[in-house]
Length: 116
Image (cartoon, rainbow, N blue to C red):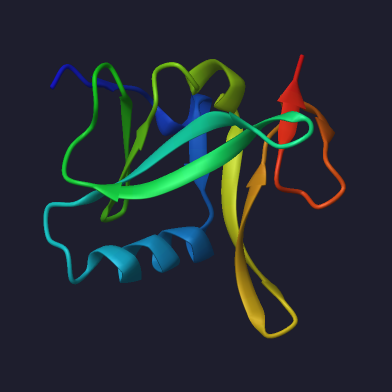
């Protein structure tokens, strides 16, 4: 593991509601962390991937948020720089939202995005 630790203010941040949500997902899985990456997908180019993993991969950027560890894929870190992850209520559902300042276009369903 050769993960790099960066200041979360300059890379990716979590709102309080997102921190609480991810902490609740990790409470029964001690030592695990959330990994954020992107993959080529959808009609506009990329989609976000969130997964629970045992450790960061490769040269992931590792961020700590009050009990939640987030690893950001090194290949995705530039397109995710400045992104705020939030948990919002839409009707009866809670949805993880990505407020990414680098996005220049999103598909109609909101599942994929492109960056400049």
